[in-house]
Length: 435
Image (cartoon, rainbow, N blue to C red):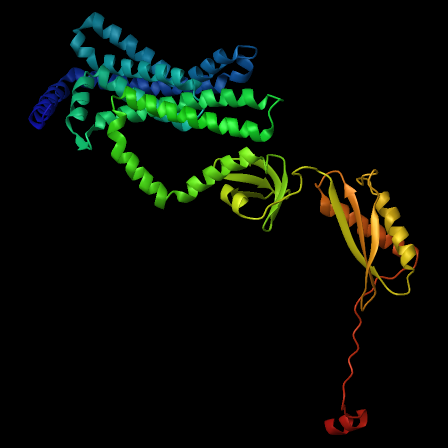
């Protein structure tokens, strides 16, 4: 269809619409549509306010409950479609069919929207539901009005040729629709596979995440290849785009690719895995998720760090639970020189041994570290079975030491400073100078 044919089609359509608008039957049908729309809105609101789906559909199968919820939510559309059908039947029995054409179109459009809403109710994503519903209803409306074939021809008449590939608006629309459907099906399949893999007790968390990512990537590549083939695009024609994509990856997407490859390396070498307690830079927390680009580390205080995978490969990482969850607690403290160091060591060892989370099979140790300027310095160490709450364990040990020192009259040293002023004037001289 060339531009002249499109212009002729638009001109004939305008003449047809003009003839329809000048007819008094058009305004009668328009009035019936407006009245039917008002009645449908009122009846739909009354139905939604009076019917409680939760109690009404109690015990029904899940698909039937979903169907009923969508039907009640679209009650206005259903009532409007029924009213337009009844009005159409009444006018067919009393006058020519052409005088009720507008009512037929309104009823058909309403039924099409109702069916589309019922079909798309199985989709969980609200944005995808709205997008698919509007696209499907637009196609249905063009088909009902008899404009689908001319619209398809018009969209296919405009094209751009790039490297042997003919791009048209119709081809892009087909690609978009098929990609949405294919990626939706891919998401369902990958979620099903992920649920199966996570239930397997024979696979470590790292292997589970690696398998899930590889399967997701493979399914997406397969879906895109199938969509391109179904749209009639020869994959060899995309060579120019693949070359441009390679240049883009080399310059603009290198960090994304580096993080993706680093994520694969982390999953393969098992240096970190979900559940590990790690420290990288100033961030400490437990790994909750390992994504394609980053890992999520929960700090335990409501914060969650998103650390790029590349940082875990290139920077120093402390993994507190790499081979063993046992953690050494180190408490440094000091006393004055009047205290008996052997008594101090005994008190510290008794406190560490009595700690609720201390490992009994590994005895604690307390050593005299230094005879410092202000007093003696000691270091108490003992083992706990899990690094979680390490600061709380240290705090409890220091509080117990404080109580024991108070009980034994042992003092904790603190800095004392003496200030001597040389060449100061006598008090009498300062008093006389102030007069």
